[in-house]
Length: 473
Ligand SMILES: [Zn+2]
Image (cartoon, rainbow, N blue to C red; front, side):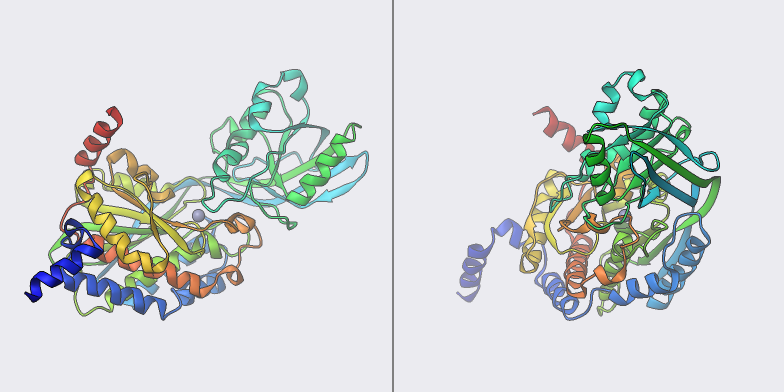
């Protein structure tokens, strides 16, 4: 009688299919993780230590090596079952100097940062007339005669949005603008910063590092300076500017992914992979990008380590190397797992600042989707809704997508993220420990339940087959 009543109550709350997926004990553990996480600060101590002791840690610098040593000792001291380094080799670049000055019809300095992989200009810089384009597409459509011998200025504006959707369309001007300008005989590239800040900070970022792109010096100017330059050009007189860059290109440097494991009790070979990237840009202290992600996944790992039992599957905490300059750590991780993706239960990376998570989306097999619904049910008290079935798992898991890796996106509110992204202003004070704790709670609950899931998320052949079937419908 009592049993029947309880079943009836359960059915009111959840469909039986979902309610039956996890044992009551596993669900209770998930709830305990959630509540314990919320009572703490989300790993704020981790990002505070990283940004204070190490500071900016651009891939291939001496600070990169110090960050790897810091990470290895932190993860060992935390008590993970196993910690190891995975070598990652990549080309890199060091900034030495950058300058952008309007020289006529008035003279003023602009706040600027060279873009990653920009070559140096001749000493003293390049001075030329400025030609302005609204977008990269307009530059692509332009006649060579409009561009030749001029400094190209692309003014496209990034729009702020909760999901960061303004970034993709705007960032192409940074990624390949110099290549397109070079093909048309331009002498240098200036872009409006790819960012939403109204403060006088320039936003740096990488370009493709191929020889064509590296043919032309490239800088980003702060948005208020871009506004002034636009107004000046719109007044109709020819505007001239000077761009100077000094920088060094380095053919090959070896850093490391740093990986820590909580060894699974039942299926140690199966892995729930939580990622963040350890490298940052060379400006600011990389607090939001991606010190916050390092804090969140480390805190999630600590919460699970503190339980009185181990999860069924293993959980890996991965600090990826050299994300900012080309996803190099993510590429190595994908290659190393090329024959092992059937054992990767799921990948999820935290790399979108420290804003609260509002939605879970998942790329999993059809069979595993009810598990995602059941996980979302435990995330709902954190204000996290169920999203759709498209997910990449974050930038460092992009190279794993062709292998059919199951991926989960715990989507953060990024409305203000691009005010600070890749600027001198990306510092610890921008992180709210309460919001960080909400993130850590979500990652702990998600990782725990993904490790306890009665079904595989379908990584590898099965997920690829499911997707092919869905796409053909
Ligand atoms: Zn990042």
